[in-house]
Length: 86
Image (cartoon, rainbow, N blue to C red; front, side, top):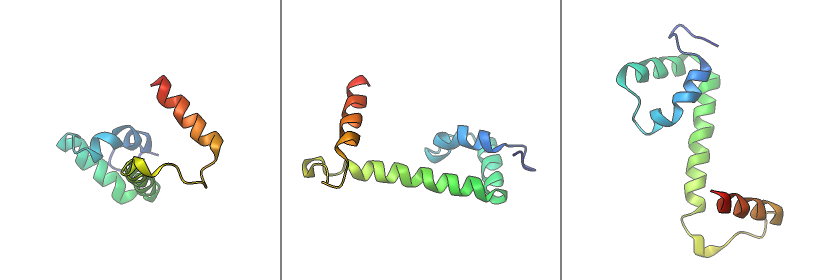
């Protein structure tokens, strides 16, 4: 949805990484932040994205601890296979 800022929710998603890494140009950052003030859905999306990044980083803080038993074996195999392809 396009808000009064002239930025769509899709554009917010497209600029998300640049925004979080503080590489979004000032003019776009103002539009981005204005959109966030008007769009609770994009705020929720931003928070979930930030949490995903945070949890991803935490998952690799202590690789020596191994994978918890609660993680399904199929998921572990899928992740390892994806890492080999990358």
